[in-house]
Every structure is written in structure tokens, then in C-alpha cells.
Length: 169
Image (cartoon, rainbow, N blue to C red; front, side):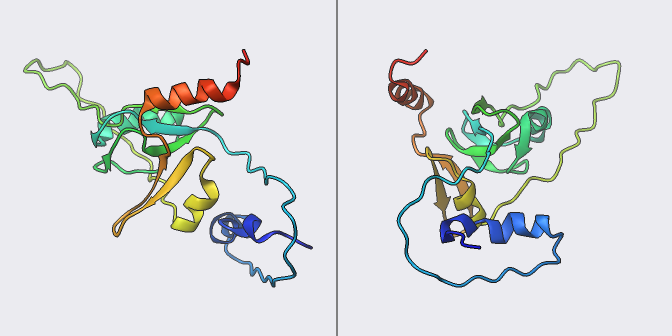
């Protein structure tokens, strides 16, 4: 079977392990250079994008888990335009992972709910490169590998999206 190398980026590190439950081996060799034959469809959903800057809190992340798969744990420093998860829908969703619980002197009759946070999906550099969309970038620092939107400002990103639609309604 002939498969382009770009189709294997990310697959070998992530999906292949899941497909064979860790019990498989994948071998490949270079055949030849060939012309571009089209886009490889991934069937990826939209992103959960931070619209705030600060430290992500467990209080804010707990309800966001219902909107998709989180890529960050509580306590992570986030910024506007950073991709913090995968949406369960096909569209990008802007969220605030930095909300803090309001502290008051009034005690509630019931005890506070215990927050249950699922472990985040941590991706390697190769998995991030395979996962990213056309309008996203992988940001690599000595301590972190993050996914972010190419245009961090939400308003500018929305204006550029309207320009790309070309008058479609």
C-alpha cells in the first residue's frame, strides 16, 4: 500500500497505538517523490479557544468538559487565542477557563460540590502538528508544546473569517 509521509505524521505516535491497543508494529520505506494528490481529511472537530488570560481554574474547567476534550489541566497559564481543547461540535467555541468562584461571607445550606476533572489529553509535538487546523500554529517553548490560533485577537480572527467566506450566507 502506498501512503504519503504526511499521512503518517501524527498517526504513528497517536492513533496507531490506539488502533492496535499497543500491540502493533508499523514499518515503512521511501518509495519516490510524487506530485501533491490532495488534502488528507481528518474529520476533526472545532476547538475550544481561550478568550481570557490568566491561570485556568478547576471551577471553570469542570463545566467546560461537557463541551469537549480538554488539553490543559487546572493551574495552566493560558492566553487569549490559545487552543485549550477540542470541541464536541464542528465549530470553534470561545470559552473562559480562568473564572474563579465568587467568595462571599454567606454560607450555603448545602455543602459545595466536589469538582471532578478528567485528565487532559496531553499531545506531543508530532501529534499537535498532525492535529492542527489551517488557522492554527504549534507553539514550542523549552517547557511547553501548545496549540494556538495564528491570529490571537478574536475580533481580527472573526473579520478575517468573514472575508474568506466571500459573501456566502
